[in-house]
Image 1: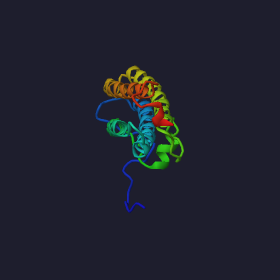
Image 2: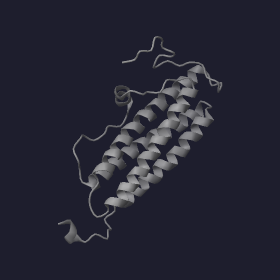
Image 3: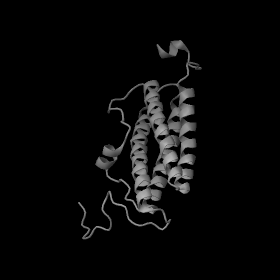
Length: 181
């Protein structure tokens, strides 16, 4: 529980910003970025779960790959939160707020085979990619070119990771059929 005596800015409000973006425009971008932030943390936790639970012949490579991906997602989330704050917003920071504002849904607590896990990651990344494209257009249309550029760079990274997951899911493997039976 917080012992803070005064609130500096209430969640859900838009304050002034030093980047001189109109408050009404900033509010639209802040809402979009808070969605991106929430989605990123849902993806982060799911990727981390899969990183912990991966097994099988390709364990080490996939384990390392998933760590790289969730670290990139965490870095992107931090960048989104800082941009959101620079625009005069309050980044979602509590688990209930993140879950409530996410447009993606994490898989349950059960542990699945890695093919199922990676398929679930790919599906979530696809949804996030589509959302990013919409938010890039929004930022560009509102004249927030810095946010547009930041999201474009993050989009390139998540698309690259999705492409790699797609390759992991291909049928071609060095693992013999007898090893999987």
